[in-house]
Image (cartoon, rainbow, N blue to C red; front, side, top):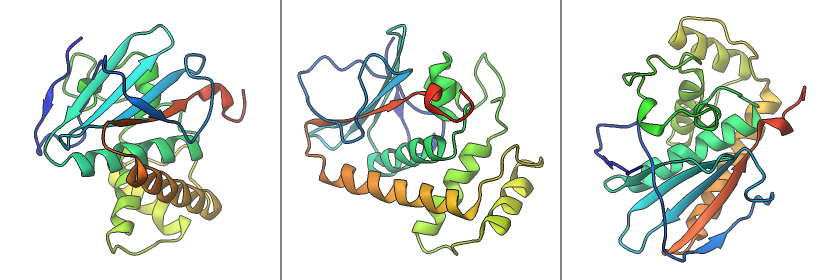
Length: 199
């Protein structure tokens, strides 16, 4: 499976990659790589590009190379990881990838059609990233009302103020880790819905 070049206009669709070079690994999250549901690798290349590579339990891979606006896309996808793990969103971006979706399916225009989660995860990430660029930090009530207005449907499990603050903290922590990741090395994360509540 080959990766694709991502133009600046292709914002949320994205990714696929098979990295064969012997990159060093930075894994601050922990977890047994290869046992979890999804292994996620962000490689900061020395040429300024970023490669996102996701490996499923069956060893299938979906990936994308970010060329232009690599910093934005890395932060965007790290924010998805923070939001989906803290809020335990099972059918967000990484949940769909774990279920077999490819990154190029994420614009809803591929053969799989419309995303099943109604873009809620995308809107949550978008609002939290907007906060970081000077937007108003909202209470959970206002935040959730805005998400429901964007999606046109009620949220299944609207996050509390505590959960939103935890997601904000996780985003900040991941951004700091990414900033300290040296060019030519890889930040590894693991995504596993079996660790979510209710399992």
